[in-house]
Length: 101
Image 1 (cartoon, helix red, strand yellow):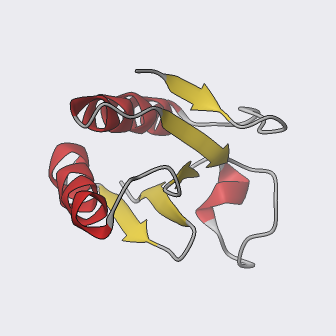
Image 2 (cartoon, rainbow, N blue to C red):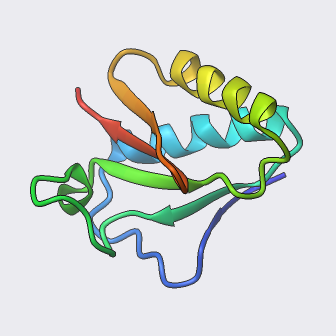
């Protein structure tokens, strides 16, 4: 499986900590036989004080995850793999991942 970016996603201003987070997330998705697809970095609409705008957050697609059980497993696996310096939030349409340092 692979780490991919949705068309239109720009890596502009992404911080090294998020590049590491993306690679760790890709290894988690790979464990489940799924691609890890980045759907947003700094582009798009986010909350006013979002860490997306300063290069410390990214979103991952979840719609290709086959069921809620695997979704929950991936969520927990992401939290464990990324550790305490990252927040992994399961949103309605994606995983929001941010580096808090």
